[in-house]
Amino acid sequence: MSTMMQPTYLHRPFTLVSSKMDNYRTRSLTFAEKLDCQPGQYVMAWLPGVGEKPFSIAGDDPLQLMVVDVGPVSHSLHSVAEGQRVWIRGPLGQGYRLVGQRVLLAAGGYGVAPLYYLARKALAAGMSAEVCMGARSAEDVLWAERFQALGVPVRVMTEDGSMGERGLVTKATEAAIAAARPDSLCACGPLGMLEALDRQCEQLGVARQLSWEAHMRCGMGLCGSCELPAPQGEDGSLHRHSCQQPGWLACLDGPVSWKE
Amino acid sequence: MGSADLTCRLLGLEMKNPIVLASGIIGTSSSLFLRAAQVGVGAVTAKSCSLQPRAGHPNPVALDWGAGVINAIGLTNPGAEEEVHLLAEGRRILEPYGVPLIASIFAGTVEEFGQVAALIAQARPHLLEVNISCPNVADEFGTPFAAVCESAAAVTESVRRAVGKDLPIAVKLAPNVYNIGRIAAAVVEAGADAITAINTMPGMVIDAHARRPVLHNRTGGLSGMAIKPIALRCVAEIAHAVKVPIIGTGGVNTGEDAAEMILAGATAVGVGTAVWYRGVEALGTIAQELGAFMQAEGIRSLDEMRGQAIR
Image 1 (cartoon, rainbow over the protein chains, first blue to last red):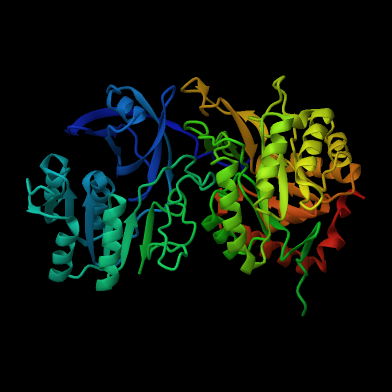
Image 2 (cartoon, chains in turn blue, red; image 1 turned 45 degrees about the horizontal axis):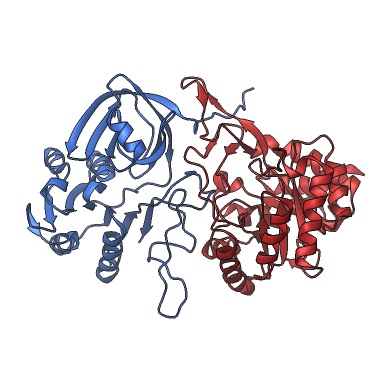
């Protein structure tokens, strides 16, 4: 049976070795095992009897996930004790690509997770990186010190001005792009932020890779649940963000879209 | 040199190739229909809809278990009323590509099948597929309609009465029955114009470490390469039993798989799970591969191949 298919997409039990609170609703989970994956890909984390949800990958060796307490599965993941197991399916989806010499990262809130993993890979590949972080308030700014520990310059924007500069992350990215033009902008955050960054990059002629959050169910491009809503164009036709094709499936084609 | 002719005639429909996006796979929006058309699919089947909207099952709803996929999505759909708009929009978008749109319906009772069919007919799909074989769809005794000749025929009659003669109907059969040829004969007798076969094969995947089934629904439908031999056998049996066209579906991942399905007696070939293995592009790639296979084998048309393996 030398041609036997390897069932790589079955869930595998991973043992939790550390669960640390990052802020009022966010935990970093670190596992004993490593995962062969790329920054920007995601996994499905399953707690038998509770449910299964997608999470972006914050580190591969060992596997690290950032879990925001927003629903029953993430809430249960917060109370998994060290030494207990979480079932992991994946990696799934298309991640970020390392292109050129210089990458600009743009994170909205907990969008920092895959970008921290990407920053480490970029630095290991000899590239330079800088990160712009946007959040509602100081308490929503995550992992700024981790990026600083890597030697990655950090620009922080908060909507209420409680940390860094007051305003949206696009203000920081505009300044960063003006100061030193990146070969690619890599972002992860809410829909509105990504749309704004897409427009900004289009205007400035910057290649971008954007990671979109969507309602993922099967994770396999089959059920159609994760198709992003298509904004209605002025002529009534459907149009896409510049990075996407019609019927773009976040779980299979993404979560990262890219445009040169 | 001339290339092989992939043109496929299914009932009154003219398709540029025999590849049909199978129901339940990405058939949830007009932009996804468009994408399937743009990669070169022959026809598109929408995801099955019911009278009322359904949210479907909680995760896990699907996984790749190594030799195929298992799923229990739970027939997520927006309900017939909303589906009519989606289908009408889809038909308009597919028109310039010459890609026919197949609607798909399911219901909990014989009467309700008729009600849903009457509503969906308003969207004027090119073909109406009647899904009597989803494991989630059962009669009042808990048996899928597709399991027994009488109930399969009753649903077919109910739908036929509801839509009249103008809209052709295909009935989608289940593989896990004693004699699929008899069931096909019963639905054709009751008014079906075509047969789609097969639906997924009921199964279960258990995680030994977790000591429980993986799917939230516990059981699900198997698809992908594991079920191809089952599908070929079913299509062959149906082709022996009835004269109507068959949309042969189950485990088709390559052009050669599609050729096998036609050799077993299929007129058109459903493709679904291949989207997971090869991306949405598979819907076009498989058609191209089929063309290349026919060319290499000196086969000029689909008619020449159809049913050749079972004569």
